[in-house]
Image 1: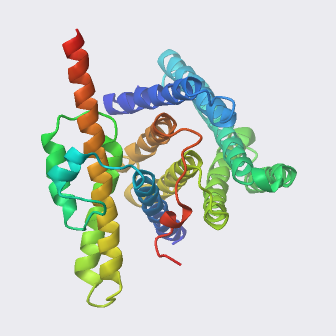
Image 2 (image 1 turned 180 degrees about the horizontal axis):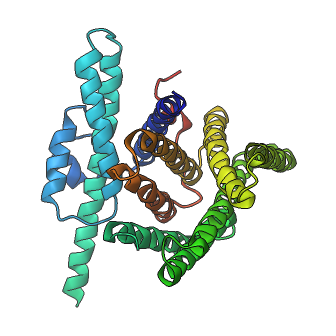
Length: 133
Length: 231
């Protein structure tokens, strides 16, 4: 009984910290301006939309990978999947959930776009270094 | 000897702990986050010490058992101090450092007293049981304190990205640890869940290192964006 109680309480706090962690990641990337290239390729002008996430993730998979930011992207993917599931399951009971989840998913999309921007910049840098050699 | 997965997680954890110290030295933040560095340096030393004792005496030896439980209590104590140092960072501008320190001492003494009261009845291996009980109780106190600290961060509208992410990682670590311990009670020793605790031990220094690498002390975020539901 006690173990079950501890499990429920700790899972609740784990979830609370996880959501806050994802939001802090989104908040820290929200001030990063996207390069013109990434804006063109993703179609994101200034504000991302909830539907942009999948497209940006596909672009990220096309771009050569590097370690930096991989864990955060995974965390963001989990958060995005949770939001999508919550929207599908509960939006008809709580209508206010839909705009909130869409806003959050848009934040996830912008975070992924910033990651794409950084990845492109990193690859450019590597190529430039190779050229110099 | 532990299996290959245990050894991989163990060496990865130790490497990430050292990585954090290197990152804070490189970012010139070693002294600013001194107690976090102290905890991770101590953890690295303990990891190496445990490995040598394990290799020399074996996992079932008395030497290893004593070293494991005493070092675990010491590490939990160091983590508690590191957590209190984060309190000092958050409440630094309010000039309540003395209250925080005294509060921490009273809490520590209270936890130690409670742990002693729990194990006092069993005369057998009193000191080992005390070390184990103190470690367990301090973890629980740590989870509660991190939760309170997060509440304070939200209330005080903390903007320092580094500090916010360090606290959130610690919260994830503590709550993940508590959840996996509770899960272990249901599923027994030999399931995949037994790898979660050591994996969480890797997560904390890795997450702190990434935070240290990615953000400077000047990095700020809008506190309103941390609130899930806008007020």
